[in-house]
Image (tube, rainbow, N blue to C red; front, top):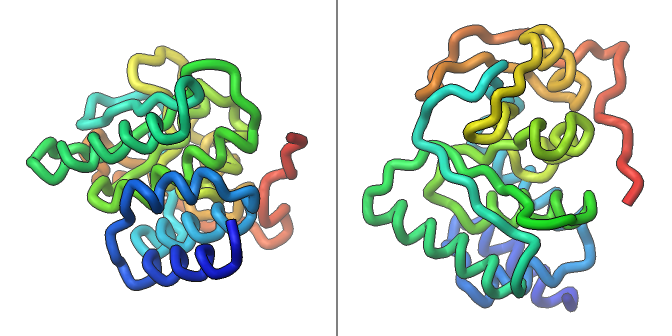
Length: 204
């Protein structure tokens, strides 16, 4: 992606303009994950501040998984835009959960979170499902557009609330326990300044 297109896309995002199919394909084509993740993190921070919602188990809510990793980039973008159209028509989704349809690298997973956050301007939350990715990748997803830390839909796995709080704080963010409608149940302190301010970097 050349500098001019990158600047144009960043300006559209910061102005709150809706991104097009062409924009989505271009974002997926970016080789600069730091820039893409930073742009998505800017959007999620504008919506939720430093708050990360979490639930020890997967509560029942209006959530939908979006698959990526199979087919072309254009097909993945089309799937996201189809979901955006349904949300415009009144689907009432509270969260989207990017889930890999096959084997993907850590970088591909983080790119999927970032693009989902940037394209789905009408879906309030993007979930980092630690049951699907492991806790380290899920932590990193919180720096790439995700604001929700919970199991994937239908997953039976659970983690103690205290462990989830520590994982979110370790990512440099403020944990907020929620119910199934994303109403805050309990807000926790932000990260301890004596701890790391971000999760350990991933080896891609």
